[in-house]
Image (cartoon, rainbow, N blue to C red; front, side, top):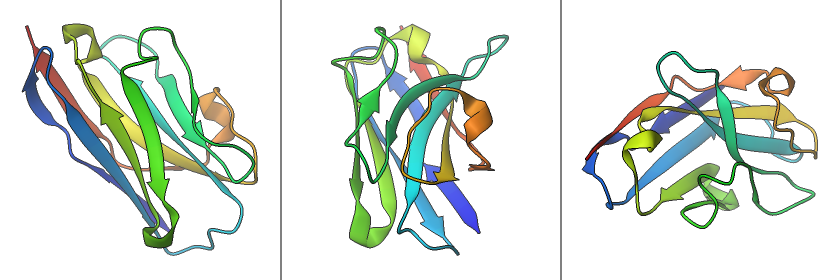
Length: 123
């Protein structure tokens, strides 16, 4: 049972990145997957989530309109498209999964976490 996040890197402000989260080793019939991020010294915060019950839910006014989560269910991969990146988006980005059909903003509801991928935005 594993989640693997990838796609982070160094990008200039205003640029774009697409992160990927690939799941393996478990059933996907009822699974909610979320993207979170954690900047140094700050708490981990929710960005977006997709579940079987709903399309992507985006959290946080700071990323709405710039970040989009989507999935290719057949490939068991979830993506986070990030556009118009800003220096304040610099953080380690994590994908996480929970069994069930509901998304939650609180990290405590997600039991499986990927290793994180670092995104650095230079101004």
